[in-house]
Image (cartoon, rainbow, N blue to C red; front, top):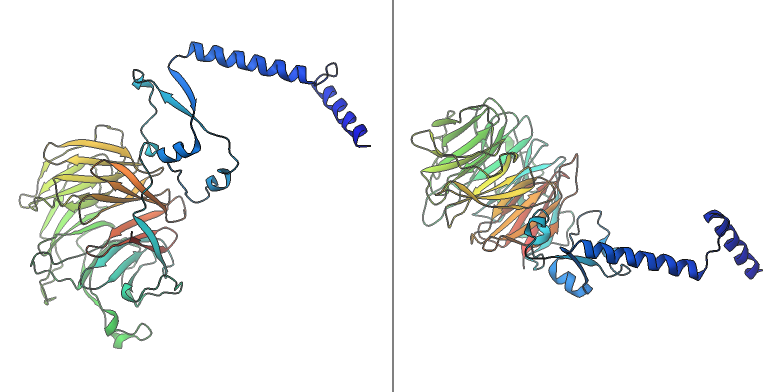
Length: 447
């Protein structure tokens, strides 16, 4: 019966092909022969292309596949055939594919997951570590700021909660900043500054975990000690001066403002108006701001275009306007300056990370940082490593000496085409935090 069934199947298959030919070994061999002749002819007419077989182990040494959410690479690796890799001749550099992250060496694991913090009800847009204590502040589109005491964090505790919630904004919160005391500078580290959708900047006197009970009303105490209403639209970015009591704010109303901050132990110096207001000619909207750490008389502002403007804080006019070589590049989402050299680093909506030399006013390097818009960049305290986050849901670590990606971490799931909103390095501890559209805060510790 089995032999009869096989004959019937063979007969039906031959009818499907035309009804006049049998599918036998001669037909298969002739097909393979024609295919090999066609391949040889193509190779002869295309001398610039060579294909070679490379062992799986060699390929993995060149590039480790991205394991983003939804990836099935781990399931296919065992049964997949040996890959074919295209090797390009040196004289045909014009045929090179567009630079991408595949060129980078991904391998060394700099960070390992430590904990996931679940307390917000909407996307987490900003993060800030307080230096005097192991405290993390996270700001969200749910209009709240959560305070986390990381000293008691257990990586196995999935129910770790924030010890206090700051409320006061009437819209989503987009920016956080605060001061650090470096080298004997006297900066009030207990003050936290937040800006958001309602156009206000709020000043908070941070309560520490030993002084509050998360389940009481703290006797009705309000920890908001100041509300600044200088802007007319949403506040996108805040930047505290690293050595003095002053702060920058960038807003959707088209302006960057300079604010005078209170000194140590004195909140009475709070003022409700900025010291200076800076505007760039045209309809450009600032999306990010940062102090030039090698010369604090200047600060940088990134706009919803390819412009990166350098302002003199005293004169109030822009001193230099370096810009990317590509005029078609999109807005700057995140901006920082290096503490060790005159360099600005910007994350753009067009998936690229660009490096600007602030002395020569040129873009000295650009690279594809993510497979979607780059939303946040944070530099390590050593000045040698950079961490970036993007809407592809991943965090990537970069060696700034070689401009190479050395580690990739899948971090956050997408929500409404957004994923990672913020990344932050702790100034003294080996900790990295990320916030995403999935309402989660994730912590990583250094290896």
